[in-house]
Amino acid sequence: MLQYPVFRAFLLLILILLFGITGFYVNSPEFTFFDALYMTVITLSTVGYGEVTGFSEAGRSFSIVFILVAFVVVALAIRFIVESLLSHWSLNYWKHKKNKIMITKLKDHTIVCGYGRNGRQAVQRLQHHGEKYIVIEQEESLIEAHEKEILFYKGTALSDEVLMAAGIARAKNLICSLPDDADNLFVVLSARRLQPDIVIVS
Image (tube, rainbow, N blue to C red; front, side, top):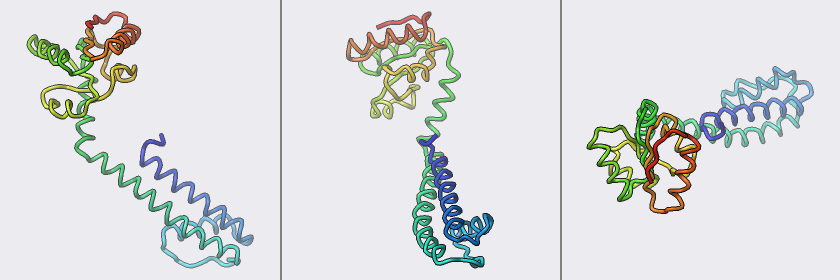
């Protein structure tokens, strides 16, 4: 969950809220829990309605520290939220989402591992026969050059997670066209374990 910017933002805000409530409550003995919550909220929001009564010297000292810390934490939280919004509205995000939807609809398709010389030939034959396919490739330049006419999944076929994301559970064929023989053997063994009935060409 920590990889999601919005989750990190809310986590930071909750932590700074708890930090403020605890600090005000401990450093000002006359404060009730609600007083501590009130001081924390008006400090974080910079509203500054006014202090509640019974504000001790220790409470004022903590308030200074809390304002400085809260400024940094809130700035970080805002950054995470903005980062999340930008990523959700970016072109790459929508491309990835579109590809993901298309992949989930694939069934009885062919997975081509690698878009090198052999991979290109395999794709041309699949296109000629009107077969459904997806290409697993990790080279960004190759994907960008051909993504308009070919459905790619960015990643390495050496990963079980990538094979599963490419729909190996629903695929009928897998073509290994990686440049390294050891890598091809590894993919063959992984694919056979994940989908025993799949037809493999390497």
